[in-house]
Image (cartoon, rainbow, N blue to C red):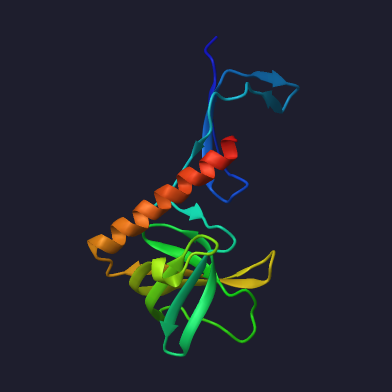
Length: 169
């Protein structure tokens, strides 16, 4: 008798697609299959750049055609960021809108003079987050020069290492 090889795909608790393969198994009754625990579960990343969650105090400031805005950062990658206003009090960004002169403060107490700088970003998505009832805005950084790209990448890696270090302590 040959062993079964069953492939499973699902959406994980953080909304990331995952898959695993289980080899073997036995029928239980007429309809159920009991399978062994897989050796590993693979997370499927479909984005060009890896995203990390931001510290709750992370802030993004930018100029828009309507003036200066300050938004909380949800996550960041080399290619962009997910941001939100702390409340929905009349402030809104539109898909396709351009943000200029962007300053990113990833850590609490970080001064604007020490911030990451990005020249431009475009609002690529607008969605209502069901748990909080707040709008989230997906930004894509535009026209990054090599210095800006390297600075963002370096900061993401530093923050990622600090986060992982805290989780293992």
